[in-house]
Length: 265
Image: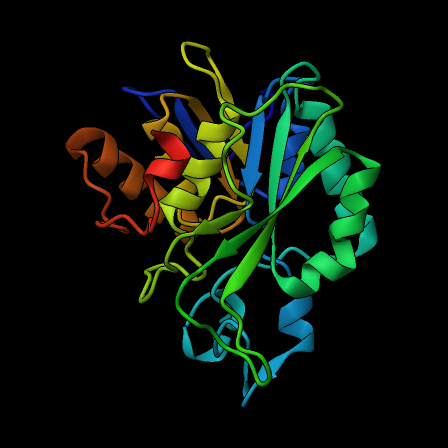
C-alpha cells in the first residue's frame, strides 16, 4: 500500500488497519492479488433516489441528522460506470487462487446492478438475509436483503457446504451509525470462506460501523477497511479498540443470531 492517507489507524495488538478515503481510490492503492476475501455493504443511492417514505428518504430524513451536507453518510452512486470500475478493482486486488467476494444489495440495487457482477466474478450463490423483524415499505413490507457470493475464477470451496442460503439474523435497531449491519452477517461470510491456520486478509471498502472488522477479529484474520466518512472512522476506531482491549462490542452487545451454530460451529 503506497498511498498516504490523511487518516489511518492500525491496532498494534491485531493486524487491523482502517482508512478514510473513497472506496475506489482505496482499492486502487492496494497491490494486485493482496486480499483473500472482500465482504462489503455499499451505501447505494438507487433505492434512496427512487423510493420515498413521506417527506423523508428511505433510510431517514437526512436533513434532521445534522451530518455532512445534511446526510448521514456519502452514498456510492450506483451508475453502471461506477460499478464496473468498483468491480474491476475488486477483481484486481483479490487473489486468483483463494479470492472470494460477498457484496450486499437491497432489492433495488440487486435489480439494477446485480447482473454486472457476473462480468467480473463467477457468481456461486444469491444469499438472502432474513432480518426477522419487518421493515419499511408502502406495499409488501421489507424484511430481507441480499448477498451475492462469487469467486475470482477459482474453485475454492467454502468451509462447510451444509450452510443454507437463507440467514436469519435480527436487524440492529437504534444503531449509532446508519444501516449498521449485525456482526453475525459478516461472521457467516468470513467463517465460510476462511480456512483454519491460514493467514487470510479480509477487505471491506465500505466499512461503515466496522461490523466486518469485529467479525474478522473473531475469525483471527487480517483486516483492511475504508470509509469516506470521518464519523465512520471515529466510530470504527473506538469499536475496534474496545473489542480488542476489553472483548466488548460497544455497538452490538448481544448476538443477533437466531441459529448461530449453523454458521460457525
